[in-house]
Image (cartoon, rainbow, N blue to C red; front, side, top):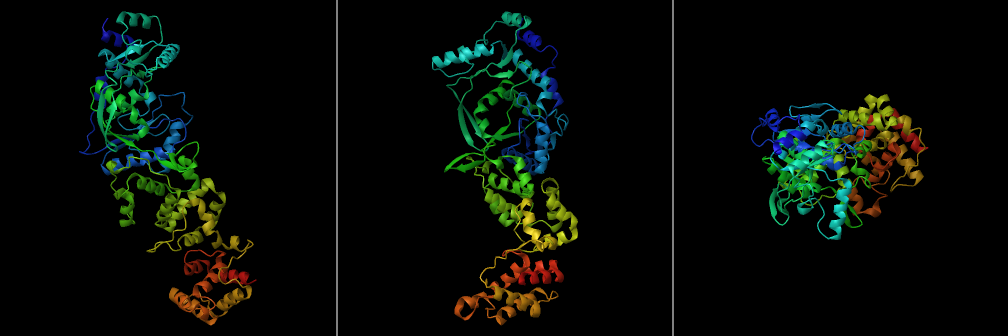
Length: 550
């Protein structure tokens, strides 16, 4: 018996690896096109770090006319959750991340390099494991869990490095006759890689993000095929990225320590490895120290958080690009209305250490993104969100669609549009005062500002109604009348006049306009008052001002 016979004994009905190499040829893409993949496990909710990776992958594929793949790595089936694949697909959809190839539901996929779910590729991995066995680069291991536990205890007692390597690799040098006999006797076994490494030697590698790094060589005889016939992550990833013709493996830097194993497997298979880019994790500051954003501790780690809050996906993507490349912020200032598709992301400009997650910055970006929406876009996005998360807002928008569009159009499309909405969960509070059936039927405590004497407030409002209110005025005439009203009641027409001679006046025009603003809306800070009045209409304005007087 030789190693080819052993390979046929273990994998009798498996095609030769060359079959799959021909089936999945080199892609016909232009030079420089990047083939990248997001390869999550369906073991729980999608972390924002996964979306971060996907944003980077999608962006690089798009800007190089490459391919973005969604591959599901489900070889650890004990940890898999129900509908885990659909959860991943839905999470990407919520962020408008649309892979060119990959899974489209729990079982089906699109693209010519599939299947894109590892549990559906069992025979492919076995073909390459068979090749390694034929070449004496892999072997069956019959060690039981008890054997391995006993070995670990001996290693601990001897104070040596733990693992299955060198003299500790008990099945590494079994004779072919003994292996044949044990397999035919029905003993359970796994397939291990026969590492050619020496831990005392170093390997040098260039990571696209982290630059030049070196590691000790891998000398562990890692498991490549488990007893259920499925591969481990290490082996599956190497075979998949080879056959899917991945050019760049972009993944979290928790995988950096596995790189010596992966490079060794590529070498053993005679395959040129893809380029690797290890992304630093998104961090959070706590008690003066940095830690990784945690699924357990931080609600913002879950993709569902962004959906529930109503943070638009394009705002979140813009924020993640801000984290990814420090030059994005300057680019955005210089290209205020450009699509993020126009920004060129560069892996070598990514931070080596983890960026801090900043909710204030995210919401600030979100305000700017929403400020660029048309009133129709705001209405549609808010209505879609409300359909799932806020029945009351849905009803408000639905029952008053034409009026709501006017409300949402206030200060929109200007050179300096309103920036008071950061997320759809804020919208109701931002616009509810514009609806008479809600505003007039609520008891109000008007929190007036500098002018807070009741009689003075009544005089400001009633004089405005009697002498100065005319909804047909243009904006300049309207504001000039507010100045006239101010002057009549003893207030400075201009703020600077008041600042120069404060003892001469009761206050200034801003104080007077604030009284009218609060009387009309119940709040001191609103978008443009003139535009609000145009939308409210004459009857509503008179009713509101008369209510405030009372």
